[in-house]
Image 1 (cartoon, rainbow, N blue to C red):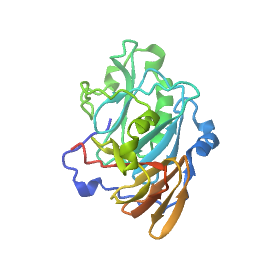
Image 2 (cartoon, rainbow, N blue to C red):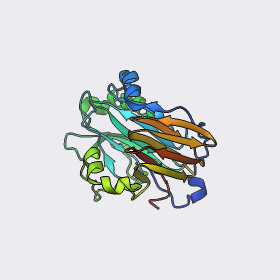
Image 3 (tube, rainbow, N blue to C red):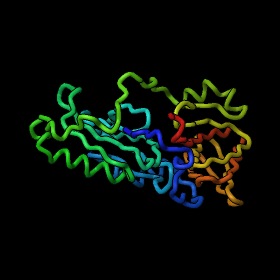
Image 4 (tube, helix red, strand yellow):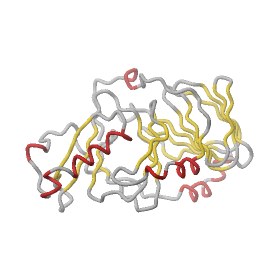
Length: 268
């Protein structure tokens, strides 16, 4: 779970890392197939984009039912339950300097932590694996009994045990239900909190964001222009717009695209 510190300001929230230059589009279906060997226990993930602000990864299964990951500013514990031979998309962001993430395993009662580790997350794709292996090599795993000296009495983050999450829904069905609004331009998919996710229809869309922007082409064709350089997108293609870049997207008739940005100060 990410720790939110009151002294952080908007300037500090902007990534100090240099985002990569506009690269070529990646086809999600092909990329997943090329990297399927990474979607295996214990971590089951592979980073697609991770050098800048946005951390875009795909995660396979099966994953342990007893693992609890504490991450993000909403302070909500979450336990990924991905079945075998499934792959899911996960988008995180670069952590601010004073934010902490946590990894917890629980006793059989599902309430009492048996083992935990708090850390500053620089690279979720590489840091999580060693921590999971550390747990499986621990006495706590062998005995199922927590060591009180290793469980934080005052953890870096106060866990939110009241807030729930929305019921899952089919993106494909949502697009059909909102077709008329999408055809007219842009329809918000998620807008509260740090994530800003929109669905776009045909036409021209221009934007600029101090962080990175991730674009996914759901249907049809589109072109993306950044600093005079144009890249063409077809169905299932994705591309990452560098931080602070002005861009223009032109979507053809019947085209549908998705955009993702993240504002780390939105939950302040």
